[in-house]
Image 1: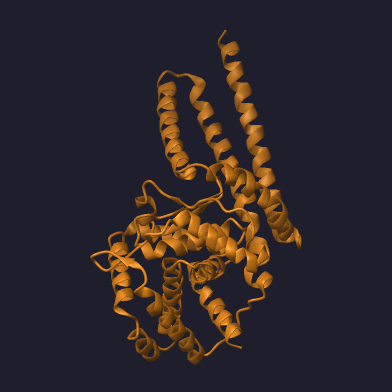
Image 2: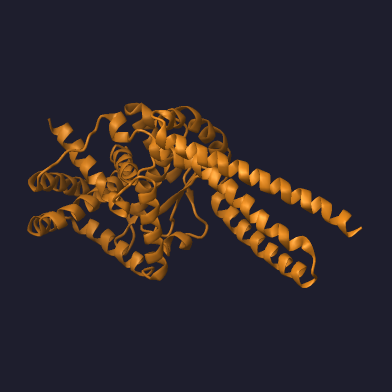
Length: 366
């Protein structure tokens, strides 16, 4: 009788083992193919990946909340419940606890497969700079200074056009969803590789999860969603939303996502979006200028309008509240993740957008 009762569980575990092996093998084969077979990642990113965005991404896009966030909570609850049940099985000397390990393996295999098909392969595709023709070149400190001064003028022009709170910080009064999608679609008319369906970016219910990790946003390959930190200063939000949505077009490299966000926001008809794009571009370019020539940086830095100074001050105060061990560990994990996916400079690659902004400015000045 006991053997008969355990037979269904054994068959269930066997099925989990087979399914896990198939998913992991498929993920491995696709990953190796993307790295080793020329043209495969580009073909996949432009032909198959859009199908997933137009189906799963469209489905989750209808939800008013982040499906990835809710699924995370449900997953944690399920794992906790399974652990309690397994502990009870062990105490009762029942065999049910043996299936817990296979459940976790199957879950890990499924997540691994989803990551590869909705994210991992895209790291090997042609870059946005290659497809758009905007190629980064070497530039002098004087050329970088000129770009920083141009961005300073743009920030000044828009800094008094946006709504502000009593503390001086920008307030995003225009609807985010329709304007960020409009900005990305408009950019897609100029750059066909960015054309396509865009779901609404999702503000996390509990943005603390991102804040303690020093993150302004995150792309979920498991639900094909663009999520952003709703607690940070408002001037960050349009830029971050465009950044995360650029990942849904298959451009995973962070410096390129930043550059795409810069183009989308700065080209928007909404003043708040333009201000967000130019100020974020200014911050990145000034960081590079600071390391290149402090005296020149100080000269340009003094030209920033007081309205923008208020935003920078409030932004620093916000992130300072979350400085700690969790943020440090998260930064190291992110650095390792980027390097594992072909971005040799790790988190430093975020500053590569500066190279593209300089190239874009020089091209427009000719």
